[in-house]
Image (cartoon, rainbow, N blue to C red; front, side, top):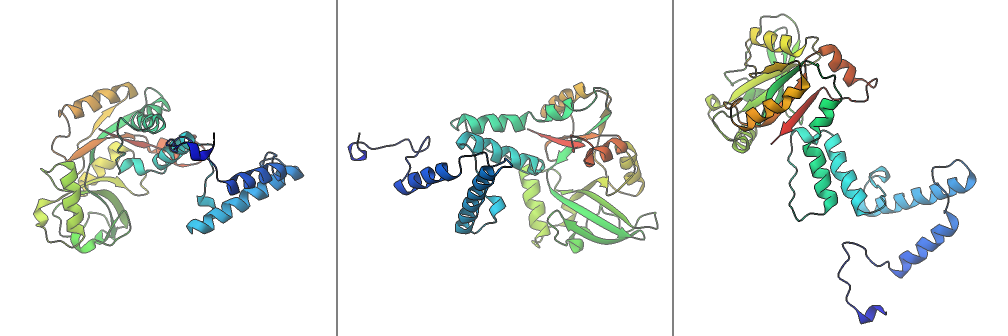
Amino acid sequence: MKKSEYLYLDHAATTPMREIAIKAFIDAEHEGFANSSGGHNLSRKAKNILEESREIISSIFEVAPNEIIFTSGGTEADNWSIKSLFNKGIKSNSNLVTSSIEHEAVLASAEWIKDNHKEFLNSLLKNTRLSIQPKIDGCAIAIKYINGKFNKAITRKGFDVSSKIEKIKDVPSSLPIQRDFQVRGELYAPNETPYFSQKITSEYLNNKKRITESFSFCCFQILNGRLNQYETLNYLKKCGFNTPHSYFTNFTSQVELFRKRWLDGKIFSKYPTDGIVIKINSRKLQLLRETNFSKYNEWQYAIKN
């Protein structure tokens, strides 16, 4: 059948190749048919064709060659792109939005992300001690103290918001310690929904006038600390910080029970939360996971609704 005799409406599945593309494909098949990962001459020739193609495409889109990824088709591309974003850490602070009419490759990847906390739990011994904390929706802040005195506060993106943070009542101006000290926590708006808490807090940090009494700071981590989760929270309290209400369990199987209690509004209801955070209590195990000696490099995981 000639192309002039039909109207093709299935490009989303397979698009007919242009003549110039067909010629380029045939030429490449003649010259570079070998496995591009091999070590012999024909493989190296195939590798050169592949990399030259990558460089040509990258120059058209004005990106680096290593940003061009060749896949076998749309299904692999959907899986690769969605799951790679998840593996980059975006899972903790972003939402993945899709719909029931999406392609199965997208829905399956989204479902994988939704249930991936089970993989995290399965990577642990069943009697691993865990901390269950609220995933507060606001703005992440790191604060530095020098010789026990407030020095600087920055956002996750590196913006200096010291003048804003030092006005917050929950942030001590000085600590009962005479050394350099860095902590991380969340600035949020109490009595707001997670969405509005994040929105209002972001506006305040971006120089819009807000009453500072309407914000709270919840501190949950000592940067480069040596204490486990339980000890960390107690030490932060002694320093004058507000810390998240936390639960501890010795059984990974109980995580789903805490998740259900949160969904039912029975725990963490005083915070604007969009999930719960599971953290390994042991600092030794945390450090082990942060190194390349472990297959799993995460020691905390956010389960969102």
